[in-house]
Length: 247
Ligand SMILES: Nc1ncnc2c1ncn2[C@@H]1O[C@H](COP(=O)(O)OP(=O)(O)OP(=O)(O)O)[C@@H](O)[C@H]1O
Image (cartoon, rainbow, N blue to C red; front, side, top):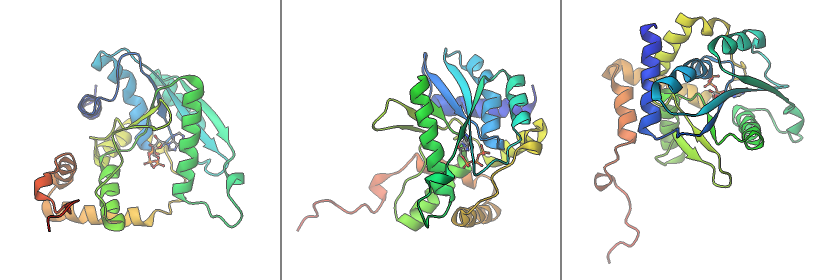
C-alpha cells in the first residue's frame, strides 16, 4: 500500500475513534459527489472497516441534479466498483424548486442535496451519513463563523439530526486538503474528478487565502494547531459575559 493511502487511512481511523463516529451494526451512507474529497473517503472505507475491526455496513450515494452534471459518471462507477464500494445514483430535479426571483447558490444547492441524502438514508435504513468535509473545510467554517457571525462554532465531526435517528459524520475531519490532493493526484482520482464550477462562495475563498497566508507566516503546523485549539477551549480564559453579573 502506498504511504499516502496509509496516512489517509490512519487519519480517518483516528477521526472515527476520537469522535466515536461508527459503532457495530451501523449502516453508513457515503455521500459521494465524484469530487476528490468524497472519492478519497469512499476509497478508504473498505480498508477502514477491516482496519477498525468494527462490523458495519456502507454504500455510496451520488445525487445527480439537473443543475450540476459535470461528473463523469462512468469513471466514478468504475472506481467505486474497483474499490468494492456498492453505489447508487439518484436523479433529482432541483431547479424547479427555486422560487421566482430566487438565484441558485452553493448554500441552497447543498441544502437540497442534504435533504435528498437524508430522505434516502431514512427510506433505506442508513443511520449515518458520511460527508467528505476535511480539516481545512472545518477551519474555514470556524473562521467564517467567527468573523461574520461573531460566534465560535463550526461543522461538527459528528452531528445527530434533532428530529431523525440519522447522524451526519465527517470521517475526514483530521485530514488536511493537502494530504487529500496528494492522494487524489497519485491515485488518478483527481484527473477525472470535477466540481460544479458554480462556486459562489467567495467568502470561503477569501478565508482560505487568509489561512494560506497564516501558514506562510507561521509555518505548516499552524492549521493543525488551530484545529486543536477548537477542541481545547479554556473557558476560564475566554471573555464570556457573565449571565448574572454581580451588582
Ligand atoms: N452530488 C452529490 N451527491 C452526494 N453527495 C454529495 C454531492 N455533492 C456533495 N456531496 C457531499 O457533500 C460534501 C461537501 O460537498 P461540497 O460540494 O462542499 O464538496 P467538496 O468540498 O468539493 O468535496 P468533494 O471533493 O467530495 O466534492 C462532499 O464531500 C460529499 O460528501
